[in-house]
Image (cartoon, rainbow, N blue to C red):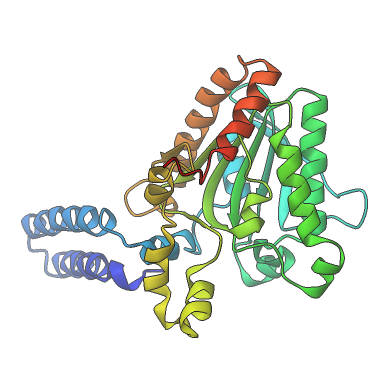
Length: 317
């Protein structure tokens, strides 16, 4: 059964009506094509109205849709081939972050991303996409390997945050993320970062420093989730909708504040409605940017990247 959210109820109701009319038509053999056509036209209008007026919280819900494409889905759809690489060469292989060499449109790149999992068993195996320090150290090892072989890096971000467990802190969670920020800032190859789902706090930022940072249309990127923000400010999760609006976490808000470089469009209704079309949009954006970034010399690339992030939050009075 397809998952629908409360705000999608008008769409679900019309879809049910269309299905019932078709069943009646089949049973009675009465031509009801005009009614079906009228309802389908109304359905398309309703979809445009609902999905073009989504609130911040509704976009958060959309980013968490269980059928939404994840890193491995995009790898399957946009990469000609992919060789996964494992481990941080220190502790273990963190399953929440995946990565390896891939070919996109004939260009060899290093792809790194969060993987949440599609069912309960896989989510437990992937720790719900929440990486431990060894996940970020694994990502850094792969980035350094890409730098060694002069291959661009593409990161796909989809996490509710870095794992906050005691053992993660004992192994240096904050240090691992901070080191990634520093090393990514000065990496001598092009880096393209794309938020494909949730982009929560340092867990997202740990693989989110790039020459180009994009968000898919129905994703969010913030220092904290709306639920956690609501819990801190109002001592309850009940104000999560209010928190989502206050955090300015949508792609449009982030672009307006100059924190990302662009928004990648999704099909009407979200990426899960047409993963192939979404993946094509992602692929085209990656290839067009690689052409521009690979033409720049290393010092220009690094200087522009550092300047871009250094200027964020600067207020000129």
